[in-house]
Image (tube, rainbow, N blue to C red; front, side, top):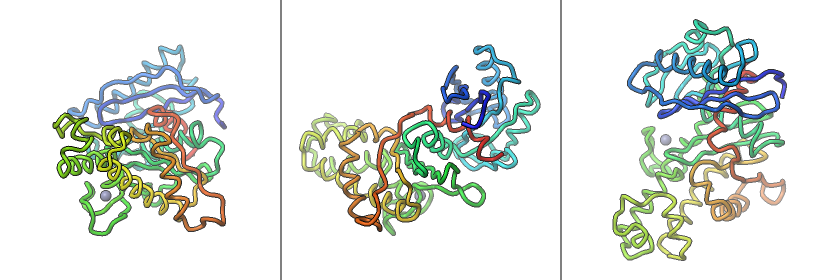
Length: 322
Ligand SMILES: [Zn+2]
């Protein structure tokens, strides 16, 4: 990459803050994490991030002048230009000037970005989309996160607030979404949404494979159990998975029709299903995207970096905003 020095990446999460040093060769070293002190304040959590940086540097025998930049992938809404975390849902940040708080202790420049965008950037530069011109990364977890990278640049639009891929409506008037709208992709394609669909199927068909796997306790049903039940050939569970893949596929077709990324990466717990998920998903998408039969299809693959994507992507945020 274009940076000849080490950089620090920080993934600010609702439970943990993970950080590490990205070498000029693209290797992550000295990774550490601490609990996010969610009951304190944005300022205190930022001070914890500063301390974490110094701890990591000391452990690696590095000084401030050895570090070119610190990048932070933040949840919620941030203003990367000013280095301010405007608002988060689960953490006590409100117009917190992260860059200024860091500047009290260090002269290393600090860059902010959205956490999902940072993860997408990490995958684009060093992970599953390395070597491709453009990528869309979709993370299927509690919600549906995403990031769009076109020609190496994060595409996030005005206010840097775009690329909320999970909040595109795929079914008008459909299932309630956490954002207030109905029918968002997140309400159909997240791991949570899949677990809920499996619970509904179990209630309607308690004698199905889902019932056997959960032992009659529906609170045990999660997205993995839905896949496990479908893999036994059980028609009830199979229908749940088929519908899940269709909903996810509809969302991906929309993304491909708008952005035409060279590759779409699927991450998060559900992506561990590998080809069992990807093969039918590719078929569904290839049959429906607008330029089918004319252009080469966008590839659909798994992410490669796992949880490290957020740290690695954050470390290279300086290239986005310099
Ligand atoms: Zn929504």
